Image (cartoon, rainbow, N blue to C red):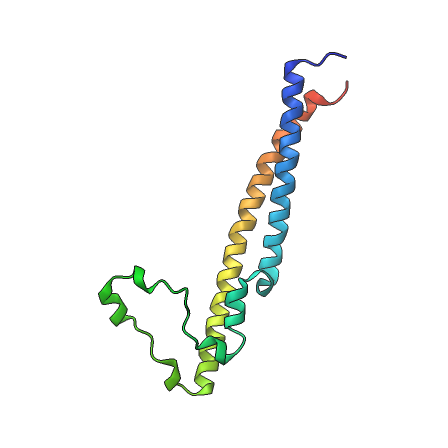
Length: 136
């Protein structure tokens, strides 16, 4: 049975769209888990930093303070955490943790939307080309 160039092209498009759909569906499922349970997909460093007051008040080494203008450093300088009581530190830590969870949910919602868009682009391409590949 002799295949035409168009049939080979259609087969390749079907093969590539199945691979793309598989990858994007996997990423979408992971993002869905992140929307439903954001603490599971949260960065491990951020999660650990919010688990106890001792870890929360340590200076954060990854903070890009040097990227800000010099006058912004003085204006936005955080208050020293050592002067706060345990209740105040706990309240700040829990508030920061809630913001981190909200950020994680939003990030995963964006990834989920991207995944759905990619899948909805791949599916019509697959079915359009599958008509030319399937046996008659």
